[in-house]
Length: 114
Image (cartoon, rainbow, N blue to C red; front, side, top):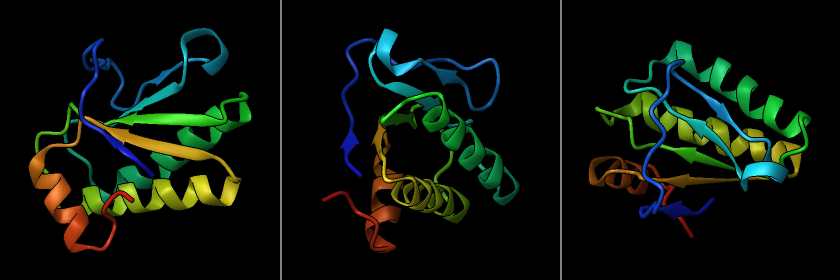
């Protein structure tokens, strides 16, 4: 996983908490937008949406974290599960627009970007 903090086009504002933007071959990488607040109940649907993007032909997905208003352990769980989902599918997922609080929590949890 790689983290991207700069997005020249700016963050995507979702109508649905996790919007699928793509397909990858038309607009660049497919984008999965995280909701402003993530709960543990949100994690399985986010992983399903990621799998749906892969099923639609995306090889690489960007997960936009700009809308997150709170970084907590549920958010860390979501990032970890999305990475695991990508790995199991043999695909890639990149995180962008992560705030400093989330980056600190990810580092603490051993999930810092390589």
